[in-house]
Image 1 (cartoon, rainbow, N blue to C red):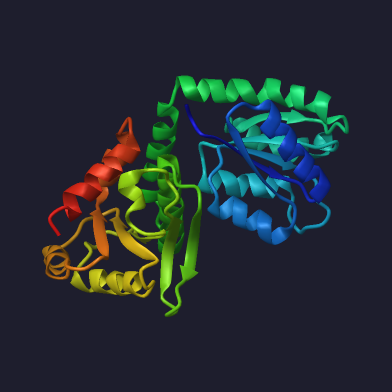
Image 2: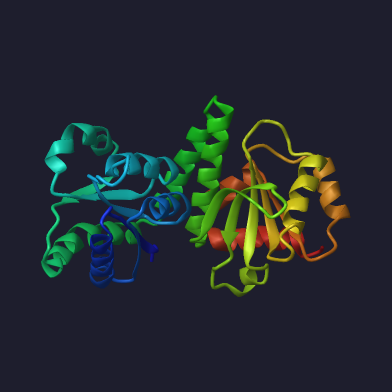
Length: 303
């Protein structure tokens, strides 16, 4: 069964909380996260996994609205669906047209103060979506392939790099990780592309510490020894909080990087190389978690 993780955003806290509780009660096997203040909204949109976002369109408390959030959500999570809830939907129909054309809008719903009635209405919209996902789990793989192909064609290096980080975050979320923070700094002020909370209930994966670091490189140049040494230092700076790192590139790794990894392989910290070929293996796998475990096992078992 596909993970049913729903994001609820409303600028009024009581409504966000009530709607989240309602959805969790009417959508079986669901996990609902919600936010109503600016900092939490940005954090959840950027760093948490969800395959459905339930958004208020009009949010007077902020300088953005549900349409702006929907556009950002679909940039970083193109297989997610959007459900808009608002009394003001007719006012935004012109602005909604591009979103409607791409097929990511699941539907609309007028807010209802009777949450028992409203919950049943929302259930009729949402449950068929998850049942369809369960019947066709390869839809996630297809979305990831399309996202990966699109980002590789970008010309702007900065945008290309950010989109690659978004893609890798979504890839690891599809494996089962739900807490991923992007573009942060560790205690030594090294910038880390992605920090993943190692929260999957899996005996093999859980032995690698509380967090996982991911370095993302989306360019044509192959990764060399110096790139590896820099990433290794970031992993060591966590003082044991992170014992596993993934160095992921759309290109390849030079022989010097492999030799340096072999030379410095002793100790608790492990770095796994994932190149373009292995990215495709993960995307196309019918069980990406097992594929990731196979990749890890192959690279670290003898170190």
